[in-house]
Image (cartoon, rainbow, N blue to C red; front, side, top):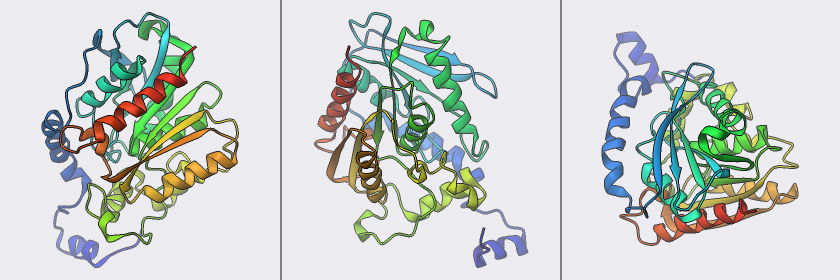
Length: 307
């Protein structure tokens, strides 16, 4: 990676870097966890919410199962992957969203708490997600009450990038992918943008910090498991629904992935949240119109997994 005057000064005087994700990540995680309950509208009731563990390559990972009312096993099930730039976010920060998705869609939601950077850099999250899905589609199906023939993946932001990665890696075992303003590449982060898109929860600076924490080595950003937009072979991918935000630095890459999916013969619905920022799926209590868009995404998920 390039050496900057900032980095040179820190090294020369042996000062701690206040922008280092290793120092800032714990505080950001706590702040988001505390704020989450106040940002989302209360979801409709569910039949059951159950914490469980999912086997992974580095040991068991926490997960949470959301069972909608009237659900009987084996049932359609979606693996949900939270956003947060691979550095923050967990089962609690996205609990309201998962509850709403399950209640409105009628689909069981299994949220996976994958390992986070900078403690666990790439490919830790990828490995956890692939292992979690393989368990869900195999021996874990009975535990979750899942129908292995009706599985989907969903995720927002970085979780949307992981969902797209899973769609590519397990394309023959998934029926649907719900990609919510997905982070689909970390190679080009200095694109011409409207100034209005900077500072609305996500910026070019934030993307640089994500690379610093998660990818570590710049060249690894070209790996299609980090940047699924760079994958050449999109034939045979599961149908998709992409929900975008107009005030979002990731807007262009979501549109590009939609166009590439269409060119590969994949049915990809596209919905634009006009005048909305990145992260609006978690802001249903404070941004008008967002709850209706989340409900729309949930209904698309339910329709895709019906018999």
